Figure (cartoon, rainbow, N blue to C red):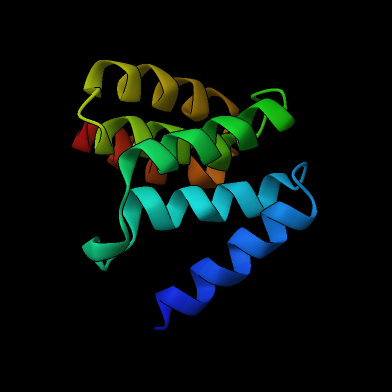
Amino acid sequence: MDYEAILKDLVRAASIDSSDATAHYYLSFIYAACPDKSFRDGNKGLQHATKACNLTSNKHWEYLTMLAASHAENDNFDKAVSVCEAALKLAPEANKAQVQVMLGHF
C-alpha cells in the first residue's frame, strides 16, 4: 500500500476543507496506527483525531476509537481507556465486540 500517496491526498483534503471530519479521521489513522510505523507521529494523530471528534461533537464511535488509539500511541493509556469506553457506549451492537478487543489492548 502506498501510504505516502495516501497521506499526501489526505493532507490535501484536510487543507481544502478543514471541517472534513472524515479526512481528519483517516489522517489520525495514518499517524497513530499505520501498519508502516515510519508514518506514525503520535502528536499529529492526536491532533487530527481530536479535530475529527470535535467536528462531530464526540458522537461518532469510530472517530473516538481513533482518538483512543492516538492517546495510546502517545503512551497515555488512562486517557485511551476512558475514550475507548465512551466509544463502546456509542458503538452499534454489531461493533461492540470489536471495540471491546481494542479496549483490552490498552
